[in-house]
Image (cartoon, rainbow, N blue to C red):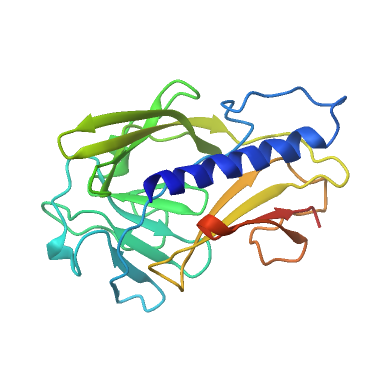
Amino acid sequence: MLLKMFSTQLIFLAYTLKVIIARNLEDIIYEDTTHPNSVYSQFSKHSNNNFHHNNNKDLRIFFQTGNSESDLPVCSPYSVCGKLDTYASPWMEQQCRCPSSSCSMSTHAHDGHSISDRTKQYKICEPVKRLKRCKYFRDVTWTNIVYPDNSTQQIMHCRCPKNSVAYLVKRHTYETEGGVGYQFSFACSPQTKLKCQRKEPCRLFSVKKSTGRPDVDEVTMSTLCSCPHNHRCPKHHLDVGVVPGRIYSEDVVRTYSGYCM
């Protein structure tokens, strides 16, 4: 399952590069697949389909382990206690429970406990002001650890500067007595300032259906360029100006290309 999810990320990365390079080979400089401005990479893992409703009736709560917050492990320092997805109808997966307080369930990014990245908010138990600011391309902003039992832990190290995105900078495999685990490290990159050329997609979407959560889509977005004056780039894969792309049936993934409107 884990390798299948990671292969989906590689497929989307390759598809993104194909679109960038194909626009006009004479007018662009080839960028290596590891260059942060070439793609937006993100790894996420969801493993349980049990949920309850918070006081906010629009927010669905899932648990990585068990059926309630009491079933979750206690968070280690600066671990993400909850991952909030605001792409469409908001939903949150709780990863662990805070030792002396509750994990914030606010959908507002300025609740003092959120690190935002595109349509995701990563909640931590500690005040985010305690985290230093990351330096572009140099500091690791967070680490995702996938354990052999497929449970995950996300540890924050610093905050990306304003108007930046996180990208996958390193993947490490390790072995334990219980099996193989993985570690993914992310760094910060400024948002692209490239201007879109005619008939060039401004944004790519990768939409994956969750097998355990049929009413939840896991969406990864990649912004390729900025639209001309008085034009906008679609923010949702069902918006006007978005064209369906290739389907990867094995992982139930479909790509979409958004164009300036």
